[in-house]
Image 1 (spheres, one colour):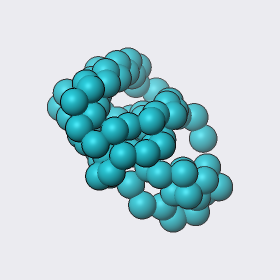
Image 2 (spheres, rainbow, N blue to C red):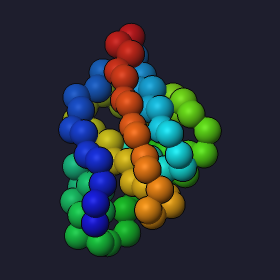
Image 3 (cartoon, one colour):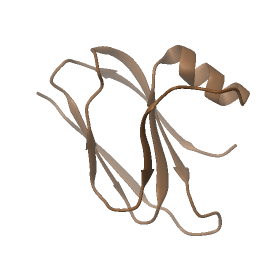
Image 4 (spheres, rainbow, N blue to C red):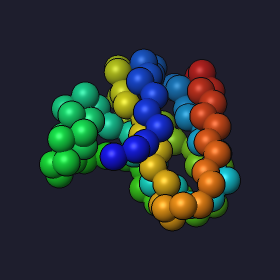
Length: 87
């Protein structure tokens, strides 16, 4: 499964701004859920289908996180820009 992956260390007031040029699935997950995602199992996440950019989101708690962006429409070009806005 192809995806953009970014491992992040987020703090309480940090915010992510994700800009995409098309539709994309955006998932913010902890370590256990990212492992389940990679293994093709069910997983929990924050985010979802993004059709309009930008998406702004915060992690529910400080710590290590995995941000995954997948193309929602196979074959369509997808450009992604992720910016961390530190609180």
